[in-house]
Image (cartoon, rainbow, N blue to C red; front, side, top):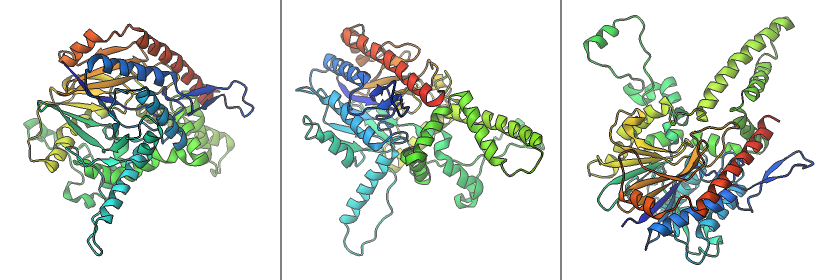
Amino acid sequence: MSRIQYIILSDIHLGGYNSLLTYIQEIPRNPNGTRYNVDAQKTSPVLRDLADCIKEIVNSINKGGKPQIILLGDVLELALGGLNDAAMTFERFLECMYSGKNSPFFNQILYLPGNHDHHLWETAREKQYANYISKLKPKDHISAPWHTTKMVDPDLIESDLLTDLFRRNHKSKQGKVMIAYPNYEIRGKSGRSIFLTHGNFLENIYSLMSSIQRILLPELSGPEGLKSKKKSGFLSRIARMLPFQSVPEPNRPDSIYELEHENFAWIDFFWSTLGRSGKVGKGVGLIYDMLQDEKAVGKLSDNISGYLLRKLKVFPFFKRMVRYALSFFLKKAILNVGQSERGMSDSVLSQEVIENLNFYLETILPNQWKAETRREFPTDYSFIFGHTHKPFETLSEDLGLEIRSVPVYNTGGWVVDTIHKMKTHGGAVLLVDDDANVVSFHAYTEGDIRSSFHVPEGYRNPLYTDLLAKVNLEGRSFKKLSQSIESEIELRRKVLRARVVE
């Protein structure tokens, strides 16, 4: 008999106006012109119905023992929303999950921050550092702060903010929220491993500072600052005689500690604090939404062109021509970068993410493992991440990775990013049993708003078999969830149209 041990959820963006798990109130005739408001003191219908479905799944499978909730990043929306709205919506989440006389969930939540809630890691590690210093004797040497926790058996750090919010719920006086960052290992009873991370480091933009340093000041990285892999074959030697050669790419950091150390301030500033900076933050949020609308991007690029050419002393006709040309190319560049970042395609992963994911599995994870334990890096493991808002489950080779036979799962996301339907966008909850078997509960994709259980093709496991036999996805709770999701998606699209188009 299987027993669910972990419930894994990510990218719920609590407090964000585009989150399906945040309550949005429609006010058609507000004198200030605001038609839609976040009301974080009310509970989103999707949040309420999702919690009911997760409880039904757990109660159908488990006959004892409470699974732990793992929140895999971008849970509190600290980039495009206020901390107060994020905190109150997190309380609504806790109320839904831990309501009733006997909640089926363990009262200690594990939280791995992502990019939109990276600041929670910063506050946690500052607390960790203060605790470390308090135990030293006067004049003892003080080590530099740590930038990650261990992946294997980490010393978890309690989040004071999230724990206090947890304990405000009268049913959860012993509740705790513990933080690990950015990688975490789950080990099943048979020794099989699952590696978890939010996934933002799979996009180049989040390691931008590392790239800039290696381009501008490669000597700081020693002789390996810039390098390219040299192939030794006959054709490769002939190719190197040609006059035009490819330029070596910056040598990326090969340890998670170095990757985070070099980029933490950039991630924290741009994705976890800037959006809360008064009118500047509101502008950042509006620009973020405008990136997915071609007409709105055209307006942005025209504004930029006008500013850049404001002091150009030429005939007005020529100036208009230059402005039009500059605006045209800026628009193309912004759409290319912005819409790539937002994942505005029906492919589940971009080529950039595929290449970085292969490097993460082949290099980053094994290097961290080697630094923390003398055991051999496992050959039988699964990998779980979020960030992309596109749920899937498949084998690594089917994604185009060089590394083979690794089951890869994505938790999807619970936000509406675009005005137009994106078939692959959707939300999933990953269920993990005590032997590290994984099943993905797809609550929805925008292309198919129906609940379903998934495993990689050919990877049936006992938990999957039990779920199919014991959980009726055609039942009332799951139909209600689908109806709520469909209705709330349309409401979020109205919000986006009001912000971007109207």
